[in-house]
Length: 427
Image (cartoon, rainbow, N blue to C red; front, side):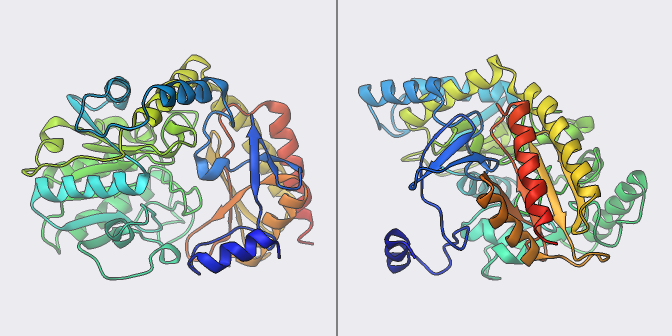
């Protein structure tokens, strides 16, 4: 055990998770690569949990941060803030929400917490609909709506949460149905649920479930839900913390795969927009955002430094068509991984979109989750020079692959080859 690991254990909570049997100290990065304290280079296929969206040490972002820090680092939302206003203007336009207002936070957890506050205040209801297998953050309210027991340490809650079918396509009671029948069954389940309870404030849903293992419903499910929700006056919150900014390749926001009946009432974002800087936020139509009848500010949300980083990062993303790159390179990578998975007996499914890919492992010949196998592949990939993540529902048995959106084709091929070797190590 390294001295840093010993020091970490002495001052950190027992529940603060670390990857790897020999935890990794990452000292610096460049592009799609990072280096550890021993000088070893790794191809990064997890990007600090989908946060390093464009590239490590992107010059445009580091320059913007340095220049803003040289002027002023902090003011708070009590003063006019040009970078914050400029980034809010761009996000409001990109969101697709009419008459949009933007509130910045420091994390996705805080963004979802704010969305829940807005929805419950606007609707005067403390009931929330959430998806099974979901994850929405670490705060008391966000944990209370998370539909994944591995990340929900308490059943105590300020909210009453009701869980809906549909976030996982290939498991559960409707997995055997075709896509249209699957949507029909999930809508019927929602209709039935609403017939047994007081009217909820909102449905919160990740278009592609992140921690849940990159699972998603067929396109159009949330559009079909929206027709039901609108009849009951229930708001739709799209949690875009992991799916936003073009990561799926096909769409800029995950909700756009379900946009037949319009954009969500509330959209939350974080992670990739800051490229490692601490940015989260909420977009909502003005009527919903302005419903609070008490003062509120954010001491660190909208910091001049983080906003400068966000502006530079968003500009780079759009100017270099990284959404298009995610679609092209991600499409090649997922097909390569599916070919590898077809010959690997531990692989149950390879799924995802763009550069948001999950490899679900199961015990050979069964649908039984294999968390020990996922942990072993995580270690083997690291030994091969590749960093990936893991997640999943009832058991953590999904390998999560989410490189920076500037990934090149040779890097995708290299990562796929390392993953192939890691999967073969299972025997």
